[in-house]
Amino acid sequence: MNTAPDTVTAPAAASTPNPGDLAWHMGMILRGHQSRFAEAVAGIPCGVRGFQLLSTVVHHDPANQQALGGHLGIDRTVLTYLIDDLVQANLVERIPAPSDRRARKIIATAQGLETLKRLEGKVAQAEQELLAQLDESESRQLQELLAKLSLTVRNLQPGTNPCDAVEQLG
Image 1 (tube, one colour):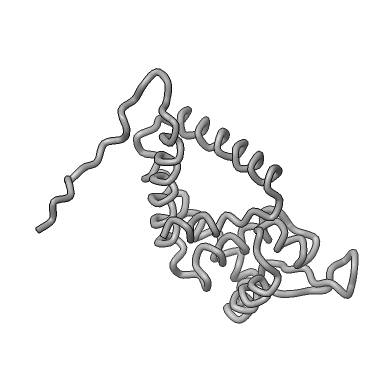
Image 2 (tube, one colour):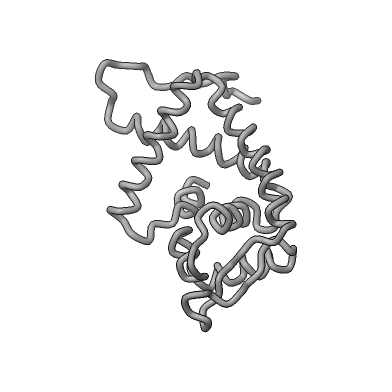
């Protein structure tokens, strides 16, 4: 017999948040986002990580494979396998890095650009569903504040892998 309630309410709003409320809220948001995000990018090899790699290659143009791994916080061995899967799917290719021909730069193929555009539309829709209770100004403010906090964490803990947080929730 299922005794779980149909809806769950957040910890009571108070003038001063209780210690631990932030973790509860962030955990719920992360779980909701992760499941919607994974569903939105289900068509790309390696799912969320594959999407993040392709998006980073297109939007941040890292100088070489090492810089790409550093930006994503992905171990170089894992990164190699991830890139291999995206190369095999014709979404990215390796070329000599202009600054060091011994290094490799990862670039998106035409198919990769088309795939990213399509998936970004799905991700945007999933994020809109998650943020549906916020008006446009609140949504923008939340995203700006989260970006600021995530950069703070990254600067305080270099090498932090955001994928670890998702895995630890499971």
